[in-house]
Length: 233
Image (cartoon, rainbow, N blue to C red; front, side, top):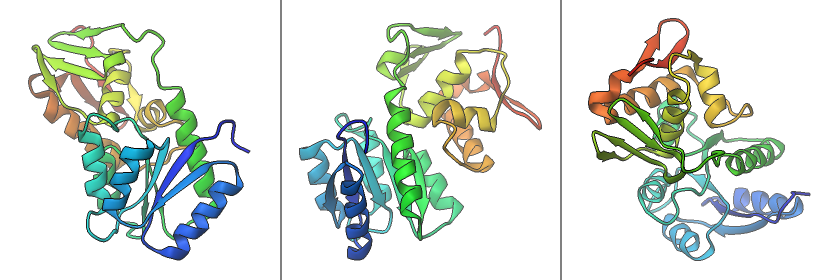
């Protein structure tokens, strides 16, 4: 049984898969809500405020990537964890979803045991993400990072980052000069249960540098190892 009664929203247009996931979530002690298209999903998210969303990418009408984009760019549901369900298996789809702020992905066909383990891992990891001191502001040169508010400013101008980009930046900025491997970056943001390709990490870093504009060079590439936040800025 799960430690707490969490509500999971399953967004899937294939009835058999939807019923299978729903049955197994209930079986292990979660509350489960279901939606078979994007419009219904957005309505349920607003009404039920689920603790996690299992989101199929290929949906009629509003697709999963668009749902993810809307949630991460809004004000009310930005912190709800999202696990993508995809039959594509294409790296580009995975990278795009992660760029939009998804927390994890599972490729169809999948094992129910694996799916339940990933759900538990994402919920567990999200529950430990609150910083020890929420009001502690990190100031690095022209860059200001407000962990408790998930706010980043460059020269006083607010920079819009995805959840993942923010956590990558925070992890690097907390240890200037410290070299992080790609695995360590993923582990600091997602947890050790999370698997991702090197390319996905590189895409996150490239997007982060671009958004930071004049402060983008603060994040340095250490060839053959990973990345670090420039020391002494």
